[in-house]
Length: 276
Image 1 (cartoon, one colour):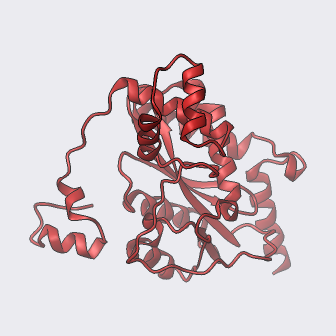
Image 2 (cartoon, rainbow, N blue to C red; image 1 turned 60 degrees about the vertical axis):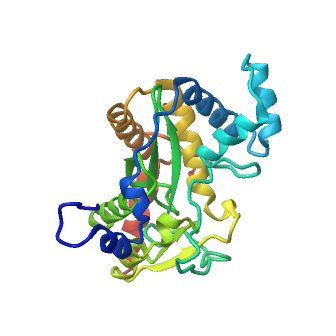
């Protein structure tokens, strides 16, 4: 996204994209294999017990044979953005300089495809290292419209996923996100505005406002990521391509009378066209 060879100074490029200049020059320190394994186990414990803080997570890890102190547990939890009482890793941290938008979904009946889309980011553990996943989901059908992987938490991969979803499926009426800096950045909100999409954002700390994509993360991890133990981003990418194809086309949803997300999505599209 940042081109150091461009005539435009890096400082100005960072200002335009609302990115930290220090991040452009930052060289990450490799995470040890031990910490990677601990982070994976912390993520698993957190999915099972989202109300656990560092003390109880430490007890779970000690029960598994890890001699670890609370300070180290807290440090690793911060690294992947986990806090107690959240159903997800809190990866999307707010930016004080970015505009926030009101939550538009309260009391709204969402029964048709492309009425509301939503998005979120989650931490993906690998056998060596980790990465981040963003997905765009249709709220009414739970269909995963697009997704991207990244080894950094910036807005670029989120915008790429958004643009792919719009190119394939058109624009929704409303797009809902949390207040994370990736989604409040001008580069992301401008992509929504340029397609005449109303912007909705969860209230701070209200993970339930985006609950369906939270449930997607739990399915992704228990039904694919934790079972496969991928060793590289290339393997994760290939594996998730297969998983999301299965999720959209084969995975039955009890809440939809055992229909798949694709069935619900295209059925409501057809009903809308017939009514028009």
